[in-house]
Picture 1 (cartoon, rainbow, N blue to C red):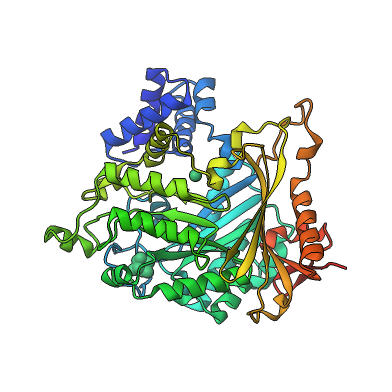
Picture 2 (cartoon, rainbow, N blue to C red; picture 1 turned 45 degrees about the vertical axis):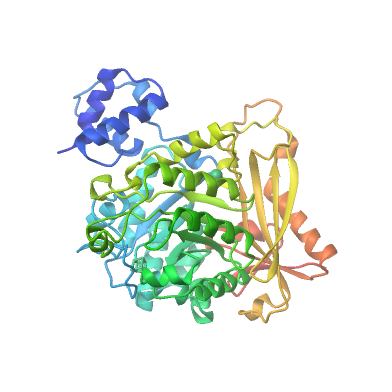
Length: 522
Ligand code: SF4
Ligand SMILES: [Zn+2]
């Protein structure tokens, strides 16, 4: 049954005209039909099918309403997630579901998983289809942030990994290359450039050899399954690694320029609300952690995971919604300026969850409201990103936050408004420690681990566009180079660059060396 078509017809009848009413309506229908909240893309597709078959009349209001939020591609970048094939995982984590036909930890009914399965987990077709879908819904697809998801990436056979990524590149290049290197080269000037590439893996799989591999594949960001910073909790949940593995992986990754994202899991077996809050405080106060991004996935109790047996015996209890909201508010108020909270809940279809607060699909909004009532603020990057509030006339300032992380100095540079609640652009700079670098190309070299400018797509017709908003990326690079040379007397700087951004760096005289874009500062 195509629920989306039914929903469209209902939407027309209800005469919904604004996005907040649409959000309420979508939640109601998803509950009623027991499906995940439909995305605007899915509904727009159903709408186009219905108008094509002349079942409904074209409606400007509906088209405007469903046009996916401009936020998504405001900086001209779109996200594409591609799922790997079902494959065993070395982990035995008790909360992790296993369902036939899906990679470990993924369940049927999850939108990304369903899409991938329908395409036989083929990376080429998955990438192609997402590009097509995004284009059809009016998004630019020239800059793609590619995210590879599914199980433990590093455990997949090496030739599968190489082929998988090559096929993603092929799809973006619209051409089949002979090998990965050729596909990467082609992507430097392709129509759909990969400007960021991430994989998810376990901390105990990160070592020097893996780092080299990841760089050769073109990876720029690694999502680490950290889950907890307490060894006893990791042990109780059969994670199979210790906290020292997380510390080591974080350091290796940062020292080679990767962006590091943590997945952490409140409400694990053996934890308490107090411990979870403490854990987050540790993550941001202890220099051994301090991730650039974080995903908070509260443990979700599902039948397909061994934890369910413990729950039945009364040995595990999910938090109440009230408790979880309290924890998330406490966590959010601790987040420093340099970290981005990517998610606070995983998109698991709510009928699959046995019990617990993770059933609430609009948790982020609920938490936001609660924070507002308490007069608390989340300072994370995501909450400050300028998005649709972009005002080209706003006066912006250069900020600098220095902090120590994993044995070296990090400098976070950003352009923001005076109050620091609107972020226009950021750069992460790492000053190397005296440690011997993993890769010889990085010897005595400062690293630019990230550069990002939000809200570049200002309509040309906007009058009074402030000159200071032009070329923010370039200004940040110049500032970073100045700091490296003048303050730290370092003669070389390197940027970890996704394949599709190499040409950008060339404009500033950076040259490809090994897999980095390097510049001598004389
Ligand atoms: S390592 Fe990840 S995918 Fe593997 S069992 Fe643990 S949580 Fe699941
Ligand atoms: Zn935030």
